[in-house]
Length: 135
View 1: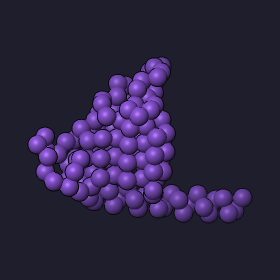
View 2: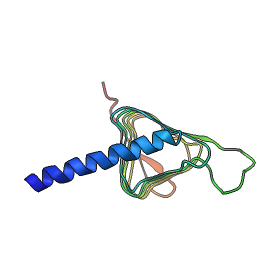
View 3: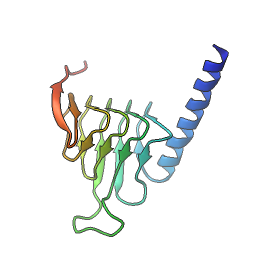
């Protein structure tokens, strides 16, 4: 029991430091958001905005640009709205907007905007379920 509490405390501290680093690098991150230390948020170029109560799991990758060179479309803004869950090894490509209360399944590659209150899975990610709106 003690070991579990110590581990939980260490994970919380590391997650908090990770979020502080990403905020320092220019990513806007909302309140009570969890970013796994093994998740990757692209901080080199472009812009990423993450809302409140978002969970980003291990191995997830949130991108803000496609290549190392300036592309014709320019750097795009990737937006993750409130209460979104992004599961293990999911990839969110640049310029995508993920709506409120959406769930991104494990291993999904999100190439297009995700409507609010939906569950998406697969490569490329497709809507598989509509969720009840939270009140």
